[in-house]
Image 1 (cartoon, helix red, strand yellow):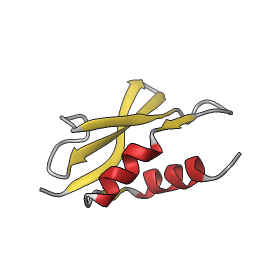
Image 2 (image 1 turned 180 degrees about the vertical axis):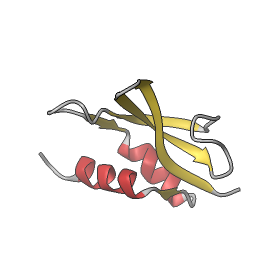
Image 3 (image 1 turned 30 degrees about the vertical axis):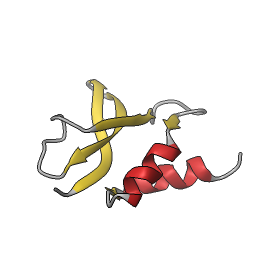
Length: 81
């Protein structure tokens, strides 16, 4: 089973809100997922992302591949602020 860490789109029309989830590659974007790791709200100016970095690292150690956007969010979450 191939696993990805990716964004799941939620929210109203024209007001997207994303949850960061671990999902099977074959499942739909709004389909089932294995675990929820956090959220990302591009509409907010500050404090727009919450991500459990420890759980993400655990999934990456097991072979999960983060999407490009999630990799960027992981990098931002790891840097000291």
